[in-house]
Length: 107
Image (cartoon, rainbow, N blue to C red):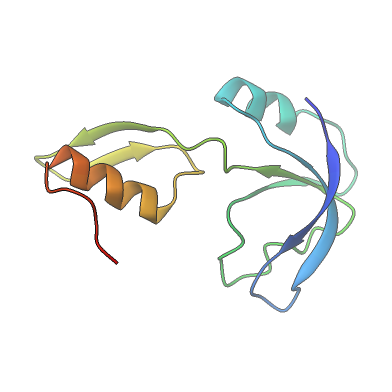
């Protein structure tokens, strides 16, 4: 697993912080990343759109989830969707529209 230093942003009280990051491409790599030793801990980071202090792990490590964006299962009877942590709301909407054959979402 490759780790790089980057600045992460959030919308909480801590607006940005310098952390070591990795971007796993599958679940096995994400699990490997959680086993990397670090005295400051490790956390998952999505798109930085959360309203908490998601970027408050200064000097720690973060797993970037943007590459973990597969949609695995959709149950049309109960509306349950199983997807990876990096899947965005926009991706889910586009995927559902395609599954329901309604065409693209217009802006």
